[in-house]
Length: 270
Image (tube, rainbow, N blue to C red; front, side, top):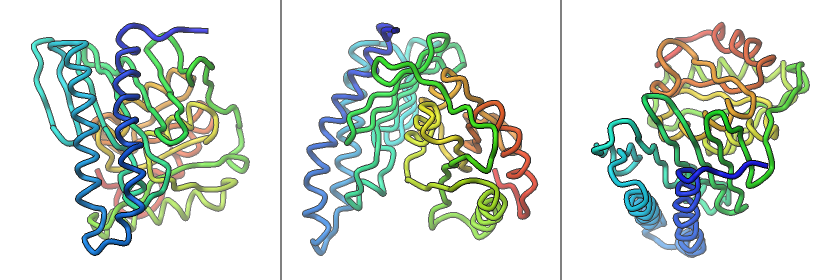
């Protein structure tokens, strides 16, 4: 059994504090669904409040560290070697519709490389954490990616382009679906990239792919997958962390899925 390092403990504590705030606010969302104004403004406030909690706790515990946050953006710190990458509410659309599947995601980049990650499943109260060279864990249970070798036995998760994306992006997504669906046991679209990656690390999903994600969507989850023995593959050109065109799976399934996704018709998008 491994214990989280001091910096990972700080990240876990900040995630838990934000989760408590989101849990209280989530209890109000259902009531707002029937109002004429709708819950959108309320969710925005909940999102910002959770991010502020994380920012305050991490800034106090690790003064000088930089931040890259979904709402606040880039915050340059005096410590140029460490940066927290934060999504205070990954799965906003689920939260908005009272779907109990969303997470707090906190990654740590150190010396230009992803070093640690925490993904807190708010409703299930599951804390996934990982640190470079220390493995991936669900609370105190060691995580390993699934060992399935055949695509026909694999459950694969993905994320769909949202309404603001171009027709080209949607066409690419549907061409990928056409390649993957008949060759796998099933597809899942749960609406939280951070939890999808955590589930790959835990062996619940065999693989996950999505395009056009942001660093705060995937930074923590990427550490979880690699420390659980999985691989991160960049779809197209560039670095997965920066472009967000990502495939995560075990070493056996990664090349098989990458081949299918890269050969699917329509433009690859960036």
